[in-house]
Length: 368
Image (tube, rainbow, N blue to C red; front, side):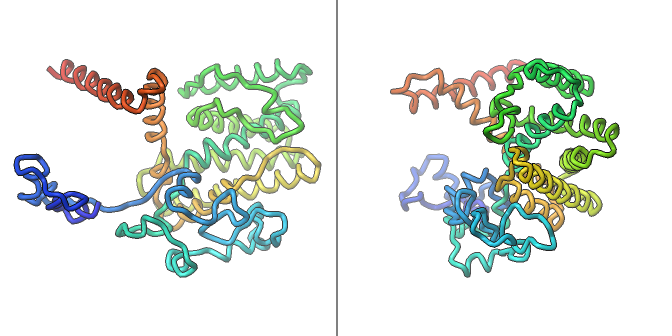
């Protein structure tokens, strides 16, 4: 990376070994130029929360009492209420006033192996929108939201819960397909994850990120219909606002460019903050009712930081999602599953290169 930023080829190898004179790297060492006048630069580091901790070695992450390296928010019950990450009230959430920038992070003893990378800062270690929303808070919103709508009788008074879920999923698939959003009929909605009383409601991990994204749109659409016909239901009105705010933020970024306009960035920020505050209210309300709905996760706290980045940077957060990386890992997994355990580490590369060769050959035949 050092030589890529300089635009010059290295004269020796990583361990100061000389290159063969007629080799490709040896010829590059003589000519020096890598890509004419082009040079690489560091833009950002993107990964999910677990990879951020494992690669950078951050001391504060979601499994610690202090869950964030960018502020002083905490999750333990013994912490002051103002530092509790579940608190999004601007009048009492003291952690909002404890933001940590890169110089402060370094001064407090923070470090990362990526410090030697020119341009790396704490802020450019970005958060993955896909894992935080579609594979994180979106699953909780869908699970608890469906439970709430079913209990409010939005889908009819059917006492058989499994039949209700079948009808809900059929309606969801039909509505999405009518608007050009294909949604598979499987995996089926299970009452064990949505209707259980011994754990929080959330969608099954069998649903992919793209499924959750389309379901969030449908949930916002359906909750608006339910709220319009139940104007006196405070909980349903709040939930409809919560679902719409998240969907509106997603919608703006899907239709926006790499850099959002001032109006788009401000609306994204406002929508995401509104979603977090209404979701926090729903979680608090049902907790007081001793009901396990609308679970608060550290990913909700991370969304607050992403909202601040949307407002300050105006960079579309979809730039930092890991859809392509997760898709590539899925392809490698499919290849590995067909290899023997003893030879998997060797055969997986051979089979991957074979797949690439077949793809290139098919492309060559089409072009010719």
